[in-house]
Length: 99
Image (cartoon, rainbow, N blue to C red; front, side):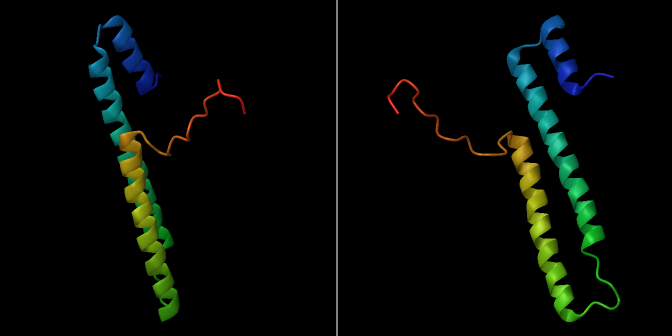
């Protein structure tokens, strides 16, 4: 079983896909992965942040805050994976200068 990246590379080399077609295929793949990761996290959120019958009002407020924070994280995952930028690139040092 080959990965999606292997299939895309093979199509680039053997089928004559243009680099722009490959880039759009990879962007679509990243978007799908982000949506799947986000959906998995949201399912986990529903299980973790479920109210219990004996939960106090304070416990429910804590769970509601956790639910909101985890949903924002799921939104960020979907957006960050789709754009391909999970972190910021650090400033590159000019290695030709003297330290």
